[in-house]
Image 1 (cartoon, rainbow, N blue to C red):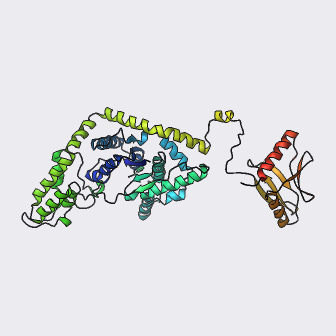
Image 2 (cartoon, rainbow, N blue to C red):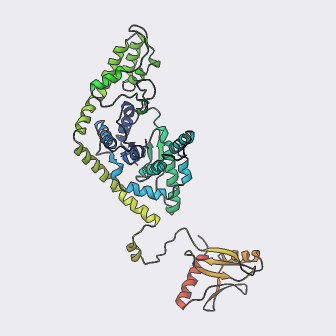
Image 3 (cartoon, rainbow, N blue to C red):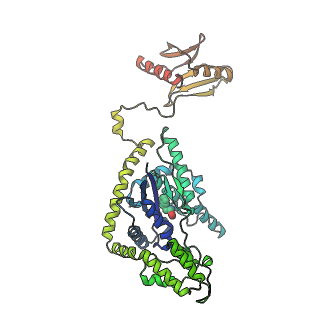
Length: 448
Ligand code: TRP
């Protein structure tokens, strides 16, 4: 059996070296496994939640698409697409919105953090918070559930979202699955041994710290960034401690074990920081040089990228379109035509069935009604002096014992021990009467 792996990349920035080591490289490696069925996509609808600059959205989509392909993602093997090219995703998002609890979404970290910040600043709790931000996890659930992904590789900050997707899937399955698992329950995968790269200043490499090394800048830009890596002030000839040097950590993320051991020894033996930076540059050039050329070739031919992504979307929709059709059926958005073919009023056993409703009459006596699945009255009981006797008769009727049904007053009566205990309404003709008796028998038939 293949494992379906799915992950999305929000298109708000330009990929840097940290994204490459932490997400892109491991995802591409994973997509090459024999049993992997990978779905990787540009989460450009999610990007709109965080960014209202159209030029930046467009630029980022192009750069990220080119990056993944240049780094070796095989688009004929993996399914690589833009979220916004799959109209089934926002449609599914709505179906899921109708079962996702607001309380569940209130607990989402990202939304809560925004509310907390507003409160702290004495603002209205929802100041500046859009419905997009609030519903972010539902859209993400749609991304994941649309393709029944088993595994979802994400950063730690996204684990909660994958768990919410599970919750929502479970609820949907329970409500509409009729015992069938409509949605696969996804699992978050956190790659423990994947490198979290330090940035130029030693903190985690992140756009928000402005400490990144660009992935596909020119060789000159790469050199410039490496020159800005903060080191201690030891001079050439003085021993350096590799374990407290983030330059060494960066080197390690791209070097083979023997190269790592050599570099460690050289640092301890007093290699100058200038030379150490040159060694890192050489290493990164070897890893990225060719990919950089492929990247620029792709960026210069956006029409080709468009074709690749549209082909990816077509491939993804081969799964999404029929599956969404199934889901629409499940929730009751069905063609009227199929209803005519199978006869209007088609008797589909849905979880609901007949039910007893007890009530007190105006005169204070106790009675009950039996309603069929459609809510139509099948029986009205006689009046009982107390609730207990009414309950006992009610119970006998559900016990599965043979029914004593007698036609009377244009309808029928139900008899127990020589007494009429309940009466049907009157019917216009014998067809109506027979049909009602059949429904009564069905309603009171012993459960399998
Ligand atoms: N929210 C994810 C992030 O910011 C991106 C994303 C969108 C995603 N949809 C997804 C990740 C579905 C995994 C699965 O990193």
